[in-house]
Length: 56
Image 1: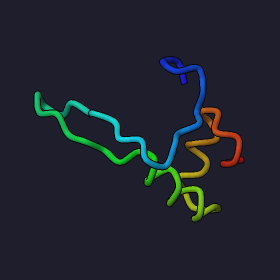
Image 2: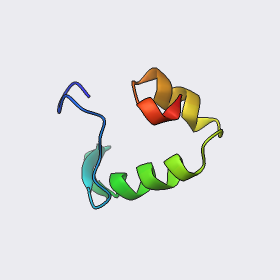
Image 3: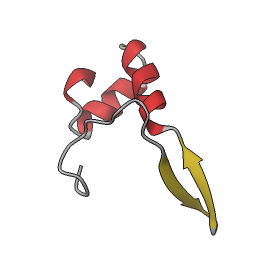
Image 4: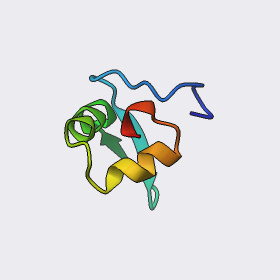
């Protein structure tokens, strides 16, 4: 949210993540869609703390 000003992620969004000097492509949009469809799971509380409205 700090970088973009929003927690809205388009389904097709791919985020580049650096892990130990290696760049990996993470399909963040698909992960968010899947997580949203599994409401009530442990990830939801963590997402709500980050400001994701539908996770509450």
